[in-house]
Image 1 (tube, rainbow, N blue to C red):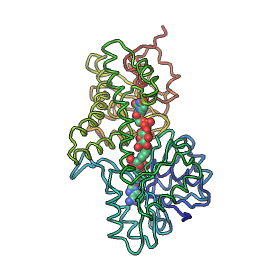
Image 2 (tube, helix red, strand yellow; image 1 turned 120 degrees about the vertical axis):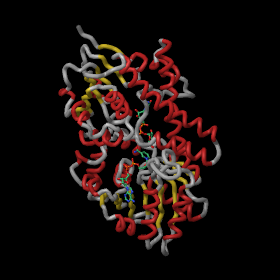
Image 3 (cartoon, rainbow, N blue to C red; image 1 turned 180 degrees about the vertical axis):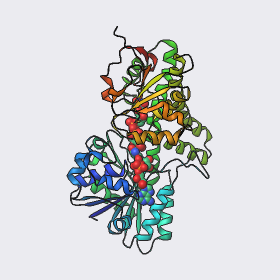
Image 4 (tube, protein in one colour; image 1 turned 45 degrees about the horizontal axis):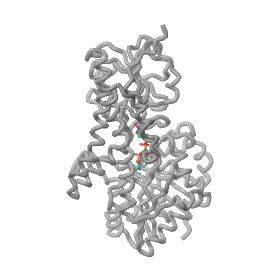
Length: 448
Ligand code: NAD
Ligand code: UGA
């Protein structure tokens, strides 16, 4: 079957970039990305320098395909109805209430999509899980589609996304692997082949891996867990380095030169952030407990516990440096995004570290090159209990440029690895560097 029309539900960090790349590489396929969030869709259709997602190279891809075969729309039902293939790229945050609150993935957005597809679809559809989902979610989706669908037949595939923010376009152009899980039935395998044919437009066939649906769903959670585990491993060792005089960067290099281990993802940091690592591991922990595998659950939970420990440890180090009280101290927070080259601050360590410093009395001057003032205040409102207080307005300012920093700052905390921060000169200021040199991170760049 040759696909002529694709619909993607969810125009976020995954839906937007992945569909832009599919549209670019498959000019004969009409790709419509839909979302209930009208503001987001307006932004996707707006100027290229204010797209809702900042990713190097994304604006160029959107410029080439938008209006040709790439469309952004709020007309969800219409796009579902006309497409032969539907990607679900909606959010799957950690549940905040009900059974599994604080651990399990909230599947309500995915279920709402499935219900919507069932309600609207009059012709057969291939429905693809692009969101990260707990193993066996496809079963639930199928149940909804079969129960609520009318005459149409649905084939469900799992095709998890492995892009990392900040390098999304490169990751999509040259994926290490494209993973497709499908049913072993004849119609399931046909659907798998249809999706393979789309990726073959730019991905070499050796890099396209097919598995059963459950392996594909679980591989995504497991991949994120293993990546995060490496970071927690190196971060845990950074604490030991600081006690012993060993240098964590030297350690990372020495460990990473073993080709069985490899050098990547061994950079000590203020802790990992982002919308996925924590939620996906919590979800994995929940699943293990659900299946009675308590030891396995505890093993993975430790990855999160070390990450929390690292964030607290970093903030405490600054507080301790000033004798346990930051009252009246002006601390510059450089970087709010959870990593460089993205405007995404979800679960950014900066949010938690800044909160701890603020609560210890500090006056904060915050700057990030890509995260807007509004987003920073939204994060503070959402995550901190101090939101809305007079104190907050008096002691926090978000700067438009790094040049606006108060000259009398007492310390600088660099919390995101933005390239632009590397050339800054903070003469006579104490710099707490979150770039992975925690063991030697308290240093003065004194010129005189
Ligand atoms: P996001 O929050 O940026 O985007 C999700 C979008 O879906 C939102 O704009 C929301 O309005 C929309 N939406 C929700 N329900 C809808 C509905 N019923 N109909 C129409 N639109 C709806 O999320 P994201 O970061 O793009 O992540 C999406 C999924 O991809 C998650 O499962 C995540 O774990 C996974 N993932 C994310 C990344 C990443 O780098 N962000 C990478 C790989 C996988
Ligand atoms: C991560 C995975 O890398 C992607 O493969 C996956 O698709 C995605 O999650 C997802 O499922 O959402 P992402 O979170 O965008 O991607 O970015 P990463 O590069 O993985 O960085 C995550 C966090 O780990 C950042 O806060 C980063 O600073 C931190 N990190 C990364 C370290 O502290 N040390 C390292 O060595 C590497």
